[in-house]
Length: 196
Figure 1 (tube, rainbow, N blue to C red):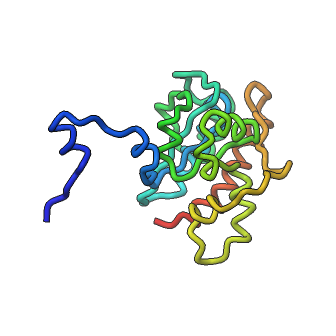
Figure 2 (tube, helix red, strand yellow; figure 1 turned 60 degrees about the horizontal axis):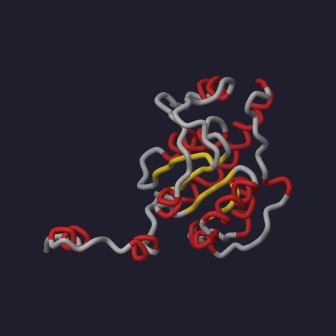
C-alpha cells in the first residue's frame, strides 16, 4: 500500500495547511537545546549529544533566545569541544523560533530564564520545556522502562538552583571547561535513556 500524505494531496487541490493542526501535530524525535546566544552551552549540547547518540533516529538542534545569529562556537568552548573530539565545524548560531519548539519532542534549556522566556512566548508548549540538568537529575526517579519524553512532559516541578548551567561567555577557560563538563555529564545520563 502506498503512503498517503494528506498535506500534499490538499496542497495539490489548492487547500492551505491548517496552522492549528500543525501546532498540535506529533513532534519529531528531536531535542532542542536552548541558551542565550547559541554559541556556548546549547551549541555544546547539540554536538555532544550527536556524538554520544551515534546511530539513532533522534536528532539534536540548538538555538538562542537572544542568539548571536550566524556566529560560530565561542572562544574557549571550541577548545573544550576539540579536546573531547566533538565536531562543531559549520556551527552558526540561530534565533529560537516557535517552529523549532513545535517540532521538538523536548526543549532543554540551560537556565530558568530561558525556560521562562519560552513559556511566556509560547505557553502551549510548557510541558516540553525543562532544564538540561533537571532532566538528568529526574532520571533517577523515572524507573527503568519510563519513556523519557512522556516522563518529562508529566513533570511540573520547579527547577532547583543546582539545575542551572552558568553562562561561560567571555569568562575564560575555566568557565568554559565547567559549562561544557556540566553539559556533557548531563547528556551522558540523558542520551542513553532516549534509546534508538
